[in-house]
Picture 1: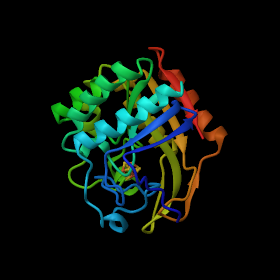
Picture 2 (picture 1 turned 30 degrees about the horizontal axis):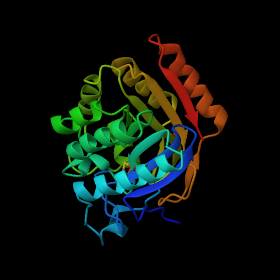
Picture 3 (picture 1 turned 90 degrees about the vertical axis):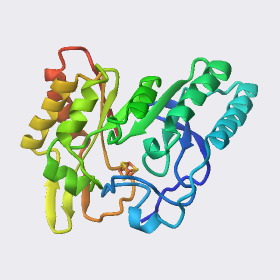
Length: 261
Ligand code: SF4
């Protein structure tokens, strides 16, 4: 597969349908991947294939790289709509994630007041209060939950360590709705096991997550690029639309529901 790794701390900007002109920040190794999930659809590839580089950028390196880029974008009157933490793995694993968010808020306030700070996270570190409070300082914490069924999470996300859907839901509830729930829908076979997180029983449990956590935004999408596992199938736009309509039916608090790709 064509692996998509980001070799710099700052990448882009890219035009994102979800976030507008988005400047990426990679807090993970420049030539490796570091994540406590190993999603079968991860564009960065399998964890096992990318353990060669374990060096993380320092807080100072991130701050200076971001300052330099924002200053240059400011000079050319092309500031981004969003600064988005994503990159080669799970950004909240960086031991100085909280301090880096503080620096980013300060830089944004100084140089790019209208730019939103977004974080794409797999939501596994929310019980760490430093991570939780740092995410609350951002404009858009985008928290992944692809399935509310533990067995499917083991197949699709392959979490390392003790992953519990119930615990993640409890942590998401602490956001009091101020987060985006992000779910990738797909079906296929991996390791001889079939899965389909768009099946009716899956969607029913996922709707229950929505009812319990009341996110202000819900993002549905499907696979769009090469995936490390073969035999994965993307959903048709109409199928995503049908799931979005079910989400709209339980959404009594006015969440925005978006379909991407
Ligand atoms: S959580 Fe994100 S970075 Fe981690 S394996 Fe899944 S898709 Fe890849």
